[in-house]
Length: 143
Image (cartoon, rainbow, N blue to C red; front, side, top):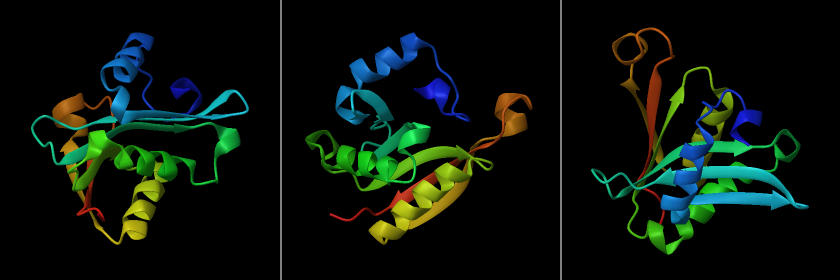
């Protein structure tokens, strides 16, 4: 699914299997007619347990335009494993317009603020080989 959804970074199958095994309560797969239509993976960072970090969001081209990504994220936040979460965080490169639209839309829907700050910089952290990853922080989330 990730490979079919550029510009997402492709991780190894092993990494994805560990995510959906170790973090099963904070990952979701959406299916439509027996096909995978969407995937969201995330977790609660040990250093910031009141936050939910969205690692990857993937929606198949055929399922786009139906708010599937937002619905999957909201479903994750409704799970018992997300009890006490007050903020949603993620990282996004500047050129990932679809992700910015998703997270800005969620912030509006939840009537919550979205702040943006550089987390991992192109030259400092990636030796110029990857775009700066901006952290988007939304919250406080509605109860």
